[in-house]
Length: 359
Image (cartoon, rainbow, N blue to C red; front, side, top):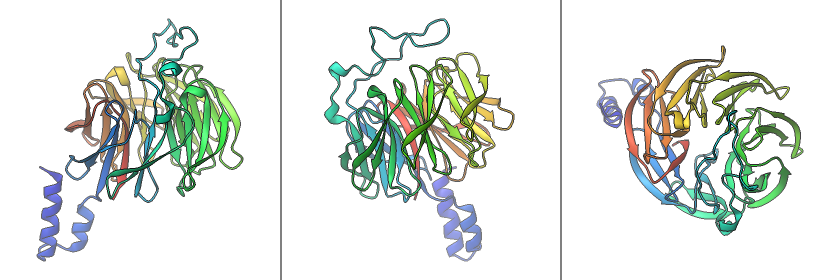
């Protein structure tokens, strides 16, 4: 049954005095939007989480990838890049990328349009792009501080991380890392942000107070993202080309354990359950999402999704998983209780990132 209809019915019954308002408030899910960046069509699809309908398509610029809301939910930040889209590199026998002629798989500077690089700022109420602010070269993924004052950005083609003042639109710091920085995640306490580097598999830990790198360790295999437990004590880093998931000590910033994911997995995106008990990992060309028990670091199950799932987002009530699937230009909606697909929503071309925005 349509969730939007159920919600409306419950509220109508409450207004008629047939059920208590408290019951209606507890039963009706909190409203939220699912914002999906579409890498190839240069826009953002906005989905109403109450009924999984598309309510807006917002043009934002070239190659939108990383996407996050401001803490108050009024703005949506989108990483934009003029670097050309290319396919993933070939892998050697160990699962490491084979680089050709000194080129990385995503940074053909000769054909790059760096005037398109930046962070797009979208007004969600008006559903339109307000402006594009500088964010260093070729921004891909980023994180937003809890107070909304700063953005922490990976600059893929120049091997740096940038710290952007969201109010002034100025880049305040540029920190050298290694080749092809991609994943950026803040620790839950906001004291550090982690940057994963694809080419050599390094993970950098940068202090947000000093804006300096304070630790570095290597996991290998093209690490794509980082997810932390809610208490910040441990984290998980997926390595795409190796098909592995790394369990890390986020206090002492070191690798603890590496686990092999199911055959064919090319792990990319991560989404942590609010209670920290389960981690969801998209497997890219593996065509599924792995459900990880964070206590035992074991695969509990796999959810078949179809072609190349990447970005993930969990609804505010923790009941639904949204999965961006680039090749099929759609978003899979998964009921987490049954781990079954309950809807498939058409997006733009090349859905990449998912941001959940409570309304």
